[in-house]
Image (tube, rainbow, N blue to C red; front, top):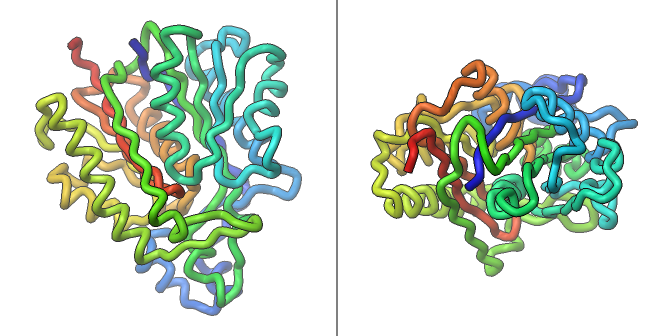
Length: 312
């Protein structure tokens, strides 16, 4: 078995408003808000790295879970924007935590990476012990803040989130997951030559088909109705997409925590940042009913993960 023990997060200090981006991208601040639901986002400082953001989120998560780094059985770091290809940020995070033999793996998948890492961790935890999953991104260095790059520049921000997957106890037990990949449309969302390339309209259409289908597959598999889902924590890609997924899935929109207005799309970090803030608002209470995580990203990769406080 595997449980969600707790969450953590880190957001850089610099706040970048729509007014600031509008000035360099040649658009109106109101257009950015209406197109994306984003009011502001965070940008990493020059000295910050994907690994340093990840380490800050890791320490926050470990503190909240009352766990020492030495007790970890594994670290998995998801990022589509690492500073270098290899060694990836996972090894740097392990070093920063004072670990010199704990396995540390990288999942180099933008946006859906942290969901994939959570599914992996749920399989490993029973064998290796607690697994720390981190999503960390500096997407501000992968977009062009110009009129030509406005469609992606307005969306993305930086940050890191973390979750501890524990083999014995936690807020909710992980019941199941669905992971899917379709490389036939990989070109519509990719990071190449250190720059993000995205066909926004095609990405939305793909996500709107695939995310609800993955959620429905899990609910059908466990005979769970939309009304029995207490919370859906979704990758914070676009407010309009979240609203449309809620409508298609039949799950009430108020059950989808949203923070994209403050942080923008932080790629693989967004799922865990949203989870951390949702959990903070609940004061670490046990999950009430069923909890769904869902994400879609580069690859194309997508999926969902189901957790519950119910004893099954």
